[in-house]
Image (cartoon, rainbow, N blue to C red):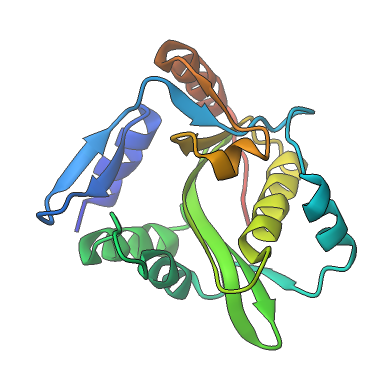
Length: 190
């Protein structure tokens, strides 16, 4: 297991871990870095707006964190190793890692998890077993972060999926400035 204090300090410096193919832990600080703006640049795609109007999902926070991690890891290739799961479950126990969960008829059908420090949330992974479940969880995450005064939603790398929500890339230098400002805030996810 990665020591929680060590991992939290890495996040404060803009560095995050991923398990490599050989099981070793690699440390990353991409340049450019992807973020989802929490201001007016956050975009909800038109089709998802319709889905939100008829939303059948029950959204929960932090009720089955470990299950969300296991679901995120349940794919052909993953960077979420047993060591990563153990580490982040410990961060969850300590109050730093959180999950957003989409439930349908009593079943977990989508969600995401990440780490909260100061006024920054570091999104780690998402999954879905039902159309739009992870997307609606992401919208719920952004709403919560806005309500609670967060200033940074770090997505690490840019994907076409995240681009549809307004995710963009910024230089490492710009990212580190935003991260330093976010670390000055005292936001509470729960």
